[in-house]
Image (cartoon, rainbow, N blue to C red):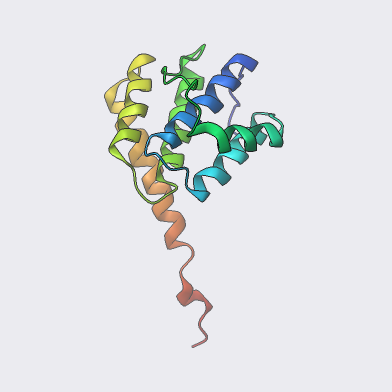
Length: 142
């Protein structure tokens, strides 16, 4: 079993807000992004009503700062970036603004470009493998 990374309440708030900034980058919160954000909120132990309201109001909130997330350690930043990549791919497009945002977060935490590129490649490979395991032809009777 993989060792879990310890996360503080402050980092949990930054994590949720940072992912919300990411999904707002293209000006639309797609349904799959919304569902993933609600799941992240639950995993981070935030109340569902709070998450729903925050997500719903995010695009129109002029007080919502665009400051880059800064975590207390690089392990939390790595988790954030990997989840950010998954979230960015949820709508089927890895938008340049999403890529740039996540790359800036990586640089902000002193993470190497090679690590960032490998994280993207690894997640795309995982997603492609998941697609291959669910072919409809498996449901046909020959």
